[in-house]
Structures are given as structure tokens and as C-alpha cells.
Length: 505
Image 1: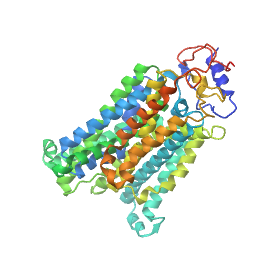
Image 2: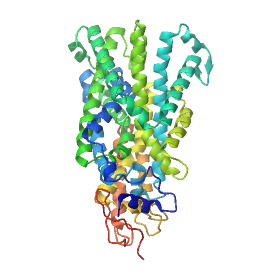
Image 3: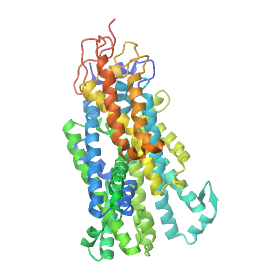
């Protein structure tokens, strides 16, 4: 049976579980090599959120070397979790919204998908606002008196901010309407341009500090008693910047030519480039403290202090292009698959992205973004929600399912389906998710447990995984969820085996 026929078999499901954007990619469609993954990650890491969270380590009082150790630890942990969650996408050619059905059920899987959609739209809003700041810098450097528009407030923001936000929103709208191809056409030079800007800022910081070596001598200013709490909170915040990608990394690895390609490519692109980019953020943060007497974590604010307008305009353009590229290529991909999965009969990848751009306005990032404490709390909350889902997903694939999924069953609506559970809901997964999320958030909502909140991501991913396994394994029997008497055919998208079309009674 051909790959096209296999996909048609999957598409004949009556409950709208299928959509052309959700079907497994055939082997010939999976063409990404290790270089493609390295290049994609080199583009993803160049985002201002990662820069600002890293630079904030200096602002909260860590020394350069302490901050560097925090960055290295955070991205090493995140990469380990991401690599473990990459395998299933590369093996079956499926995106996250389909794979999550194995643990939560064909209906229950919509809950983690909805949560991931919410987070993706949130990040969409943040990056649109960051891009608008870059546009605002360009306009202020080219139009005399533009900054005075800030005296007129609309929806909680100045007139200058409103104009820049609308322009950036329109740019995102144009890119989404033209698809991801519009991003790929310029992301090849968008990444290098932002890297050139970052290197230029490092050189500027070194000259301002007296020497490059002087940047390494930044001392610890946080009290010794507060060092470890500060270190752990910062570690969790850094992981929070990529926790959503840990969850839906299969949206990218489904394109992999082989497991080796995605593992090597991500190993080169993700931890190495994130650490290198974050180290530059630390160097510039230390340099800004030496030059201006305060740590400036926002590179746009820093560039606004440069007297040469051409430097500011060029730098802002680099930031704008990089921000749009990263936003659409990461949050756009996630929203595209997640929202399509929620309403596959009505939404396509592009339509989902358009809905997300409109919905992003509701997060009003101009009212809170830039306040370090609020951002850290938000990143912690995101990690508290994404961690338990990732824990359940990993536990299901590696422990409960023993690295084996039955692809047609992920699309079937038959009551006897392998992932049907109870009318399409797996109560064990939902219990593990609720308890895991509560434990992760307990330090935020219960004052006496505040000491736990710095560990929220770790608590969430570990507790949810343990609870899920404890609930699932005792019920591992023929009549429950393991073998539902399917036709004696196994399915792996890497092969050309036939797809079962029915469930034997």
C-alpha cells in the first residue's frame, strides 16, 4: 500500500481527528538533515527574550562566572529533555498534537494542546511587542518629534508605541499570509545579522570596560544567603524560555531524515548556540554596568542611548527581522499545528496563525513586559504547565508504551481504539497533569510553600511522570490499553507496511 493510500486510510475518520497538516509525513517528505536543524536553531536562539533573561542574571547580583554556570546548566537540562522528546516525532513523522493523544486520549489530548496553544499565543504577543520596540527605535531615529506622540495614551500605551505595535502586527500578518516560506527566504541572513550586532555590542562593552578581560571580573553582589535561591529561580526562568519548545519539538523533528540527523543537528544548534548567545548577553550586561552605572538588560534600550542614528537604525532592523523570523518559525509553527488540531474541520495551518495574531492582542504585553519580576513569575508559570505535560508524554512513550505507538490508532474514532480509554479520555493522564501542575504552582499560590516555587519546572515534570506511570502500569492488561486486538500489522512511517483499516471484533 502506497504512502498516499495510507494517508487516505487515516483521513477516513468521522470525528475530525484528521487534517492534511496533521497526517504523518511519508519518508520521501522528511528531508531535513543535521545541517537544517543546526541552521534552524541558530535562528531560534537569536531572540531578545533569551538575551534579556540571561542579562538579568547580572542585574540580580550574580557574578559573570556564576551567571555563566547558570546558563550552561539550564540549557544542558533543557536540551536533555528536548532530545528525549524529539525521538517520537522523528520516528513517526507526526506533530505534537497527534502524539499527545497516546497519553491523554483522542478527546483528552485537546486539553494539553489547548494549554500549549495558549502559551504559544502568549509568546506571539511578546515577540510582536519586542518587534514593535525595534520599529519604535527606527521611527524615533528618523522622524523628528516622533517620541512626543508618547504623550497621547491609547489602551494603556503611548501613541508612539501604538503606531509601532500596529506596524509590527501588520508585518507579522503579511508574513503569516505568505507562509513559512516567507520566513525561510530571509532567515538565512537574519541570524547572521543579529549575531554581527551581538558581537558589535560585545566589542563596545569591552572597549567601555577597558578590556575584554575586565568583563569577566564582575563580582557577586547578591547576599550569600540569597545566592542559591537566586540561582535556582534564574535557572528555572532560563528553562522557561524554551519549556514550550521542549514540549512540541516533534513539530520540527517530524521533518528529520533520520534520528541521527535531528540529534546531531540539535546538539550543535541548541545548547551550543544558546550558551554562546547568552554569554554575549552577559558580557554586554556587565559592560553596560561599567559604562552607565546600571545594568541594561534590553538591547533596544541600550541602542537607543547611542548617539549615531545610523547605528541605531541598522541594529533595530536586525532585531526586527530576527524577531519576526523567530516568532513565526517557532510560535507560528506551534500555533499552526495546535489550533488546527483543535478544529481540524475548519482551520488550516495558515488560518490558525491568523487567528493567533488577532488573539495575541488580548495579552496586552505593553502593560507588563520589561518588569523583571513579573516576567520571571510568568516564565515560572509557563514552566509549571509545560513541565507536567512533557513529563507525562515522556513517561508514556518510554515507560508505558516502550517506544512504540500505533499510528492509525492515533486517528481512529473506534470505541475499541487503542488510545480511546474512556470515551476518548484518559483520566489517569488528567489526574497526573492536575496534580503535577498543582505541585509545581504550589509555591506561588500557597505562601507557606514559597520555597518550592524556584523548582517549579523540575517538580512538575518529575511528579507528573511518576504519578502517570504509577497510575498506568498496574492496569497494563489486555482489556485496558495495550493491545486491543488490532489486525496483526504493525505500522511505522519509516517503512511501507500496510495500515490496519479496521478493528477486529
